[in-house]
Length: 402
Image 1: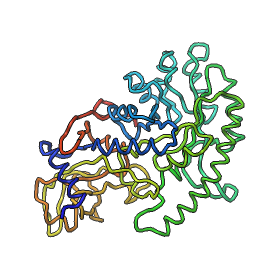
Image 2: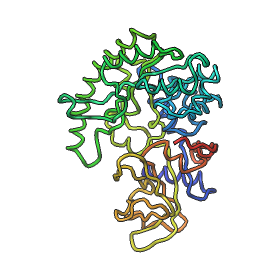
Image 3: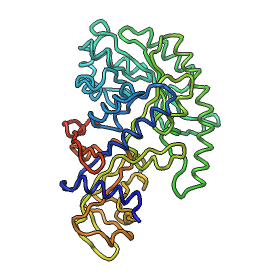
Image 4: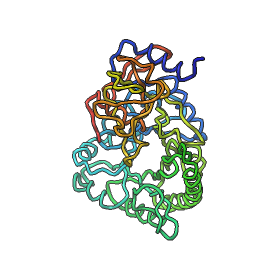
């Protein structure tokens, strides 16, 4: 009896029979289902597209065209400028501070661009850098968002749970920085952001690791209680100095929880549109896998083994197995521990290997979302068992922002 995975494999194979691997596809039905689910989980608050998790302008636009989605969270200033100039968005929040002098000069020279792009800051040094590029009296006001660190630091700060981002951690520090920004000519404070990576970006049900999952859930509950109070206090402190247009928070793994925070006015999501493997480890909501890449079987080195050409599209983060691509279809294939996902060849073992011949496709899922697009120039858009379009990735349009 055919399984759902068998049906998906047959459908993808039929749709792409005319293509030679390696190539990447996005299943539009799954993409749209994920987009609707994320918007539905946001409690009516707008969802901002995290562009780093998509990296294809046509698909960013597709998400923005759906109800509940508004604005882009870019990962670099040059990318934000490009997206605005290309007409992809008129509202680009740069998620990280920038030291790109050329991009800052371009932003400061164009009032329309300055009105569409918001810079991220977490200290006065970043403001000083902007002023060295273009003095306040020679540019339009530049929009600024404060980055509030969302990590949890229990036991008096002796333990750090979360990523290491902004030095602005307390409500008092946020208020102090807001005071400084509000008093600086040439800047306008319009937003506050906090990304709770230890909740939004950490799966609470890692496969086969029940004890670790339980520990993660305990830490996430403690972190959430602390952040809820601290973020509310920080927003109140910042609002004493600026009329904030938005308070941004969250990510794919915390859309529902973050949107329930009364201090937050919008949430961000992006990875959930593609549904990479890291999000298989979440209990609250798991996106439907929508993005895949195919590699061709090129040899059979021994019983129970096949080798595909390429496949070593590993993801950023700690160097561990969770960052490796996962052979997905046909079901029943695994990476070989001594080789993993190889630069030029990837051997695969498992029961499904016996049924594969040279020239067959093996479908993989990437561990993270947008990083898949750094390996291909285009994405083949599939509906049913047909390719209904081909769109360029950032790489395909000649851009590699990071």
